[in-house]
Image 1 (cartoon, protein in one colour):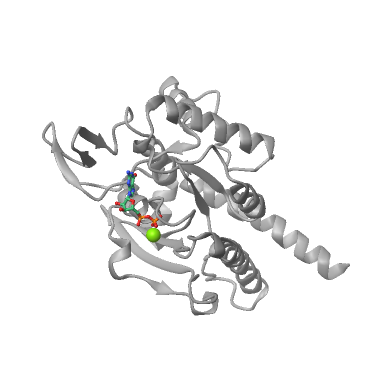
Image 2: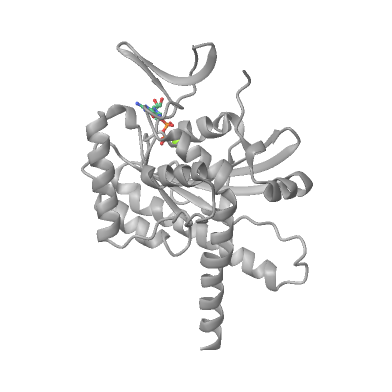
Amino acid sequence: SEECVGIVTLPNQVKYKAVKRGFVFNLMVVGESGLGKSTLVDTLFLTNLYMDRHIPVASEKIARTVSITKSTVDIVEEGVNLRLTVIDTPGFGDALDNRESWKAALRYVNQQMVKYYKDEVGVNRQNIKDNRVHCCLYFISPHGHGLRPIDVKFMKALEQKVNIVPVLAKADSLTQKETRNMKAKILSEIHKHKIKIFQVPECDPDDNHLHRQQDLELKRSIPFAVVGSNTVIESNGRRVRARVYPWGTVEVENPAHSDFVHLRNMLICTHMQDLKHTTHHMLYENYRINHLCENLG
Ligand code: GDP
Ligand code: MG
């Protein structure tokens, strides 16, 4: 069986647009270096985004270590065209650089809103390119004890500008019980600090049972405990992505092993449009109104 990202399962309305004009989605990944960000993006979109497509954003080069990197790839499946851009902050590493790195990410998100606003009030507003960040996957280390102070600070700074989707990185390094505990701890800290993360919209009460069940499972998966891999193995006659260890194999798409499938479904199949909608109608609108008020006052 052919591996497939799943954009053909986008809702019809979105798909129609996607076929006609190409559908744009901008995803940012943040979190300290080594947490599996690049691997997960490649696993999600079955790409090798990090092989040769780096387009460094010149204006964003800060000092020597921190630079924002933008990679764009066109994913075409059965005539549906998704233009995916991934924004990465590779410098998010040693303690000294962390602050500069998250400032750079924040500044990037902000600049895209400014740019969109300028285009919108400009003369040629028919074909505005949407470079705003529609979703930010925030990687949380599996080795800590929940959120670190810098995670809290960073997420609080980002929440006004971008949809945050928290993920528990490298979940295969935790036991099932540890994963449950970590997820609970992270959620409770998110609540305690009143961090706004992307809310999966309430599902229509008239929806069928299966759909409501899927929605419930999706909500229960947050923060998604994820596993990434670029290794493909054969399992029960299917080619699947997995991490192979001396003691066994972790299958990325096996719901018993990780929440990867829930995250992918949410991002690609069920909620891509919601993420874009929230970006435009809530986050960007908020920016726009604040900007107008500032200029009036
Ligand atoms: P990044 O710096 O956050 O982009 O991390 P990378 O994707 O470059 O991965 C860093 C290292 O972690 C590599 O050796 C990966 O093979 C490994 N890695 C990536 N994802 C996972 C995962 O889900 N579980 C485990 N155990 N290792 C992973
Ligand atoms: Mg990376």
